[in-house]
Length: 256
Image 1 (cartoon, rainbow, N blue to C red):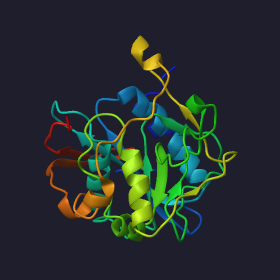
Image 2: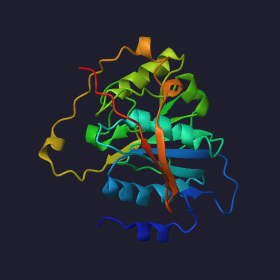
Image 3: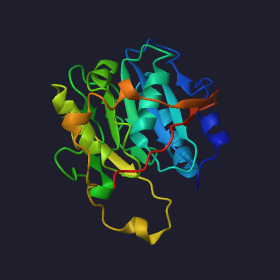
Image 4: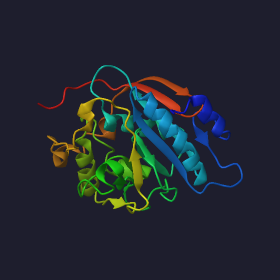
């Protein structure tokens, strides 16, 4: 049964308006912003919120969950939405860690800590059930990742020019390398995630294929990212379980 928002609120009495939490009986050593790119995925959202709030509280983190919602009919742009989320979240708090989280992934192991590596960007979803709990390919950086604000700005954030599904993960992995960093990964026995699937469309059941990128990241990464981000902020609302940032990010057709 899909949990209702009322049920989730009742189970998390210490979560404050906007989806913010501080441990009531101790001082949190880490402050993490959880950023979720989103558009019309309410079932996934309720499922994620039901699991993620208690999960993060058990880790005694100070955190806020941000939902960055894209409006309009253009193709979904996950990477650009996450850039928007980072910019808006940094107005609230000097976050230690930015956790970039797909709405359809639920962590399975409490010891998968939602904090950043001090030196390098961390890929957390290193073992997803839909990939039989192994990496689909060596440079995969999708699902859930954790970067400090310094890491994020050093690589100029994520690209703004990937419309539709996939492609941006390879760009992001290349950016990390070009910025003089490397990817560290949560060990597979800790970085286990279940992929929720509410889609009944049979096309969604086809074998996963690695998206192909038509971008030349080496040429574009310094000019396409946080320093070129443009969007229109439509609303910013504090809900009981999350802060919702609704934006118009425009639409540019993908490369032909």
